[in-house]
Length: 181
Image 1 (tube, one colour):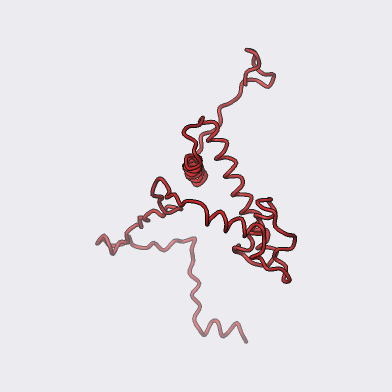
Image 2 (tube, helix red, strand yellow):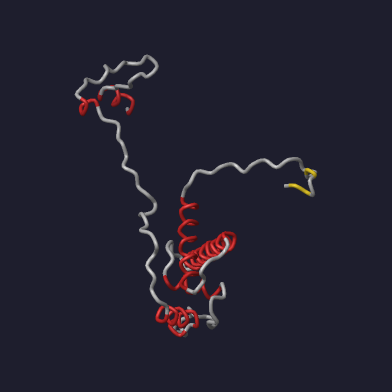
């Protein structure tokens, strides 16, 4: 980083190591397209790339936080997988809507939660916009290339060597019975 033309006191910065594309980049690209579509549907005709990056980053962080919170509630309930109730509790914790405390208590109906009402209202009023691109299944499962056996390629396997350091322990039944008495 430069400071008025002078090098910083820490010395020159090293370039960030390049990462291989993977799940994180796939998710960010997906979110970027989704955010751009949402902005377009709300009437924006153009925006700066930095604004798109920022909105996408906020979206990724928010979705990640919802997942972490839902995972926490599933763990507290002794489950390994989250369900819709865990997600709704996560949304309420993150302040999506004004719900009521104890939405998941036995005495309260979750359907009367402010979060559920707002989500139902949004889904009912919003126009469904198909995603701009067809998405591949993720994670991508590649075809495994198995090494063919000797039988499959029509060859004889090499003769097995009796290694001196690998001694076979072949006790006869009479020898093993002698050790028992």
